[in-house]
Length: 343
Image 1 (tube, one colour):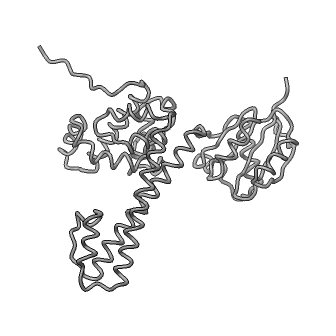
Image 2 (cartoon, one colour):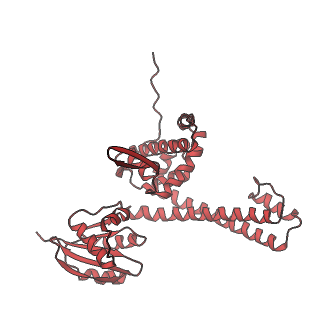
Image 3 (tube, one colour):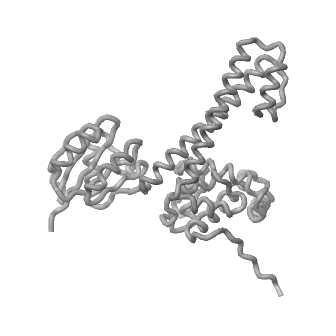
């Protein structure tokens, strides 16, 4: 049987430091290669075979992972937070990092993280860009309000961002400098552009055959809208990677950090180690869903009895995770099981 060669990569924007070792730890080669497809292609030709490779999850990992995958016997991505604890050292440089990643790979102790399929990553990139556009549009809305307040103009706050009302306001507004009028019109124009872009992006994503059926199934849950369903599908990707609801809740950042010492357990604030994109959407959905879903309204009322609104929102968000995970795993529309009435 051929002996396996193990490669660790420390990836940066312009260069990639690498280290190649045998299973016994003997160093075959160390060095750097330019972080370009052409340079990596030439580097692949000189590699001893067969080989496995590991790298840390960074902004640049995705395209390198996809490029190397067809050539590798195995490819793994290390969790950056877990890797930081293992590789902490007084002396630290790119080559040492590559060396340590190689050692963790060859002894099978690499803290591996989930790598989403390329098709899902592409759609997720579009969705996250849409979210960026929405945040930019909100800034434009705030700027419009701010400009009007600066000059003491009177306006209807609830109707301000309506197209017809804004046009009417611009025609009748008084005692406002011409420069402010121009800035208001420019901000309004930008807002319309951003709104149009985000709608087109959502339309492109939701019609994709890869996720269309899943999104529709998730929307059978009362209170789960289009954006919540899309975010769940594209941030979770493969629901079977979660063996329990608790794992999914933790990934979504809806539980507190746990610390245990001397037989005593402590619970801190909500953990920062989470997927912040899905956490934000779930929290927003949890504030509105109880108005449409009787079961979620019941969960909210039960927590509100203790007088804590934030805990009530979190409880609703956790229940949403349980509902969506069940629908996604079972591949069936959502149905509430009716409780048996007492005789």
